[in-house]
Length: 317
Image (tube, rainbow, N blue to C red):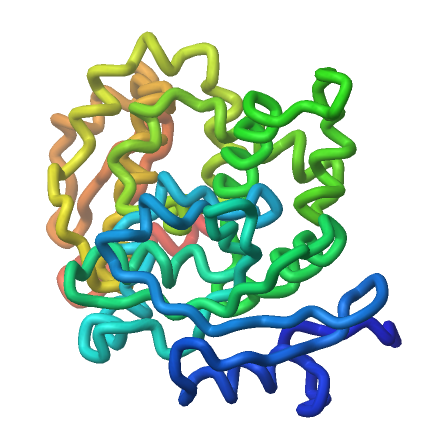
């Protein structure tokens, strides 16, 4: 077992879980400490940021694999009610002070939720002089309550590719970016592929977390036809931007995935051999249904004549 301090360590003396527990009932300015993953100690101070100052003072760390710009009300519907009631996040976020900015390592959803409520306040534990190794550790072991989606990871990969460079100006390799986000190279590659899907394909979903991985993989087979069906895809949206309840958002997203997928599935014309069944006069109690090249006969046993039923049974033997 690793002897590194875990964010939610069971060691109540050293784990940041203990710090968060204490900070939950503490005042702004209170200080706490925990071991660094390298050496020495990280010193945290509890600070309070007004909702109106969040955009000015805070930014989500590159090591946090959540896509902050793609968060929605539906995506935070599990924590928004309590934050709205208390006018603050009960569990403090975790960040590092970088110049005059707060780099939020853990708590992107909490930060977003507080920002939706003008009178609310964002509680965050802040440390100075935090190493890159500690930043990565804190970011990658923090958001365990609600893991970033595959699309979150993909958007973050692309963001790093566009915005970050080495000291010599050269870009980071995909393997290096995967290491930053603590994901496999394969996941980094696939997630970036999904994140490059056109915006109109995903714009109708109430949040990234509601788009299933299985559906994203299915869509890869149709990627060269997205633009051809752009208007049809957009028409599948309900236009409902207020899907706040988690269950409603999940149900809506499942149906939306089916509607979009249906656009790309070829319509199978019934075989000429089956056309006659549409006008065929069938005995009482028997109905025929045609779906593509499939013919289904529905037999109501209590309505079919005994001799007809016997004939059907003999044919099935």
